[in-house]
Length: 488
Image (cartoon, rainbow, N blue to C red; front, side, top):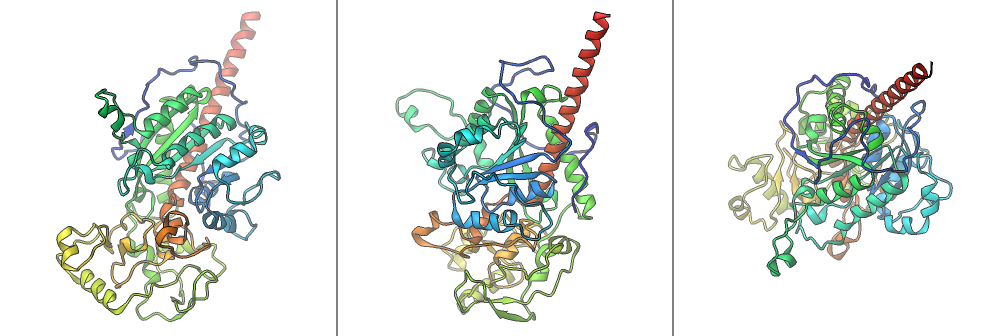
């Protein structure tokens, strides 16, 4: 199932869709002999074994799963929410019979939900002993503080968690790092305090702050906005992908860290070809086998669901994409629980789906929301023949393309490219004051990195590290040869 690693010497001659590049705050020259200061880097990674990774702010494990599918080996993951961590654990830690390798968890680290600051405080020395053995550090700090769909508050404490990410980078000193976040991370917050004082200060985005801090500790960093739907993900989901390469490796790459994005494009094309996927996977391609009309149903017996709900009896995949997602699923597909809509709600949804004036695949405008008496500001009826809109943490943000209902957790997971063997743990939903404290299944799925986007990223990063190490060894060999000639 795993696809081959792109050749380390392959040239990037493929046509690429224009992609926004976010440059670091300070652009520095680079080259084989250039180094800003003497940094205590570990030896070059050993390429005879799979590269190892750790995942920070791991959620339910979308990024970890994708990197594992790419052939990397997980060491540990940090996630503070117990529900999300239980999902990650059920799939990647508990030795289930699944199509990916399980984490080789450190014996000294308790397998539990850890806040990153608590882990850094309790185990700094043991973490430091992993320096050089974790080649890839992944993570996506919580994005709500700079998400365009949120309040974008500069003071949101979650915005400061990226500093913990940087601290972990400094301790582990990986060969490469990857960070995923919402595009809003590149937009500078208004600095009200300075404005009130009458001082003109150019505000920095969190991306710029991150790039500057990582540059200071020895990483060349580049961020680009990537559309997940170009990678076989049946969802229009734009995300900021930040890749950093340690400077002692990046200096050997033509174009430096930008080479990683060239290899990402090659991985994207290879992934589509390997799985025989179209350039665009539609919503119907992804979830038509989970439709409910005329399908046998049974009571939902999920231990995390109260009684009274039903789910479909799954009959099997119908499309190439569905077959890909169902491969390796030897157990019953979970999280198929259907919502219990009131008759008037189902009637309203049916009228919205049938309304020719209601554009599909985009958020309903104010006039249409008023027409149907909707107080909710973000609601999007899906379009069957296009990728789904961005899957969020709120289940009622998206309506099914042909049935008067919201999506199930499994349908949302399919649109994120979670395979059917991937099981979810915890409540299905939560509400009220618990909404900001708990991470139920819909939230886990909405917050996740699409695993098949992460898979391509993992393949590209492995290829980047391979290429950089190969060039570094080659140049060192030439230097030694020149020394021997000079001595002779």
